[in-house]
Length: 453
Ligand code: PEP
Ligand code: MN
Image (cartoon, rainbow, N blue to C red):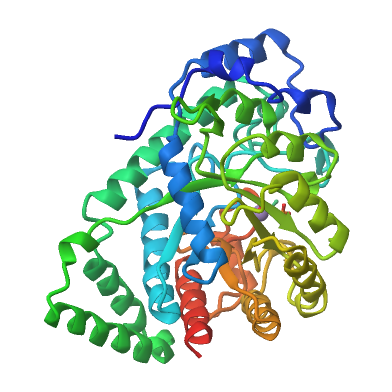
């Protein structure tokens, strides 16, 4: 039995949880409508937590193992989840793709893979501009379904606090389905392997047949040894998102009745984005006060002093599993910028988990005007990440990707050779371009090869 987390009343009295309110804060909605915000927060303050403290602690243990080289983390999902995209088909396709990738990575790394969705709460987006102009009309930028709508109308782009409640309920239903899928037989190792067999049977993917054949032999060997396949029917699956809108994260922060400590119960793992990681800002302060494992995105401009400051603020106890650095340098810069940061952290004595996000440093605009990424750049950044860690003797602990289980066309290349013409009919993302189902699997096979090699 996992002890329930406490009530918002408990969290209201907990010291420091509101200190962020007096600090500089960026990328927040402009709700304008005071009573609407109060009503939404009052409703959410008595809503049940989405995750339980015991699960969050379990994840911290798993991430500690990854930080020490005894597990590998796979974190993936949409750039921005939408309420409309929350259908059973899409959720199952995404979970299925993550499970497929995880099997390949487990084989490649010969390590357990910690599976984490950018899912069930990834509804708020930082933007480089507050406004968007189309055909001479300027409206507020889209900031994620938790804040406003993607439709380019004044009504839809208004920041609406009632969306906080919708975000909570959408996260709850997504998580409910994910829990059902991952515990109810859908995640059976043999079924997942069969799906991968289907992928490798396609003529465009012949080069991956030998990896699939090797996994096949490993499974037969396990079966011959009498492995308990029933125990492999379920998997652990964790939820994560960027903790951006602090009113939402705050209202879902509850006091665990067992440890009397605050947990952000909106997700198991939350991260701070590249744009909101100021050491003296609200986001770092708030997340320093919750017990969840925390990630921080690090772009190519990150200075060694920044990472030392983040460790001091977010992981003062130097607790393995507490802090993850998600690097997103770009394929052209990773080999140049990452080594100094890794050396600085190692010298500081902290054990952080290093994860590569090969998406956000590699965004370009296609000649026909779409925000995209080249599959080859994504692969190259991952390779650079592994090279740097191998050279320094540190642990390349995981992979963070924007991906979907659907057959969209948003990133260029891959064996299926997605080209910019395909964007005209199959580009669906409301924010950043995602790897589609095939590209995601292909990336997993390539990473598995380099892990094994
Ligand atoms: C994201 O993960 O979608 C994102 C905005 O990333 P970053 O903070 O690294 O720019
Ligand atoms: Mn993104």
